[in-house]
Image (cartoon, rainbow, N blue to C red; front, side, top):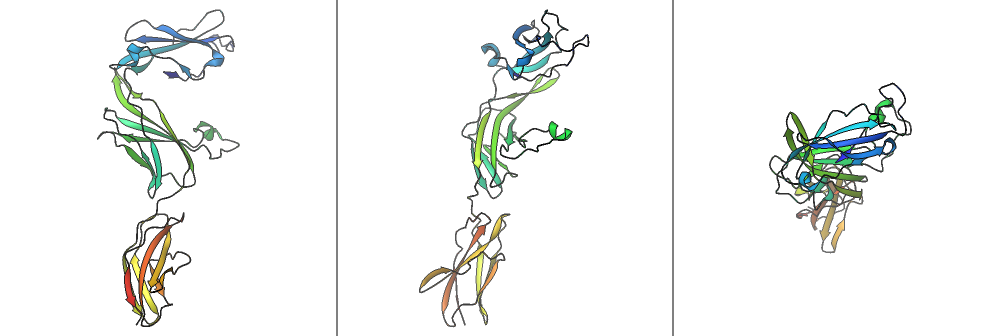
Amino acid sequence: MTFHLTLPKTTTDNEPLDRDSNVEICRSEGTSECAPVIKVPISKINDLQDTLPQNLASGASVEVHYQVRITNAGGRAAGWSKPVTVAGGDAPDQIQGLQASLGATGLLLRWTASTVPFDEIRIERIEPDKAQPKKKTSIERKQTPQQQTVLAVPATQGDPGGTVDATAGAGQRYVYRLERRRRLRLGKDEIWVAGAVTELDTGILRDTTPPAVPQSLEALSSESGISLSWQPGTETDLAGYVVYRADDSGELRLTAMPVTAPQFTDTTVVKGKQYRYRVAAVDRTGNESGKSEPVTEEMR
């Protein structure tokens, strides 16, 4: 168990808190007496931890209560705080095989699905390279640093084995922390039991997923040349299309830069000669799709 504490600034006598004071934490199971498990100086209260004994760390869920108090150098204390209840027992499995890949709809996170029941996967995303403001307002000071984003993936139909972060983008670096969680009701309280955290640093993401291959390519000869048209792509990062033409001498690329519209007229054709055309789609990163099915047309 990890504890996060906020200390009072003064004692019950309205005096400044003695720097020689100690923080004490006790633990109890069910209705048993609260036994001290931690005692540290108030200067060392960051991320206090209590390792549960085996009988509380495994097996069926059990109520575990913690209380805290501050004692001065003379041993005086204001009494124990109200108890905080957590759950002991088996935690959900840690996520294994975590991988990330960037696609057209966002960042795909995949992991090995678990057969052990749980309620949700909590996903924490941090952007460690994003600059923080030098001067923070009172609102900004309350926000989690490093642009933290938290997602929850329900497991009502079992472990999905993956999810898509639709807000992740190319050129960014993300750190993901995932944990399986189980919801428990202990008395009147509803709490979450979490498994160990699995962390993944994506590094700078590069978009390597090409657009879909253009479909329904058609060609029509006219006085001005051979006009091509095809079904437009639906990708949000689509930059345009590249047109290829082939004849007896081989295939060449007709468009030095991608054309943005799903149509193109080849005005460099020779009357009476037959040509074969194919089209590929290109995204803004430069990923090019496979070429479409060819169409053949003769310049009349």
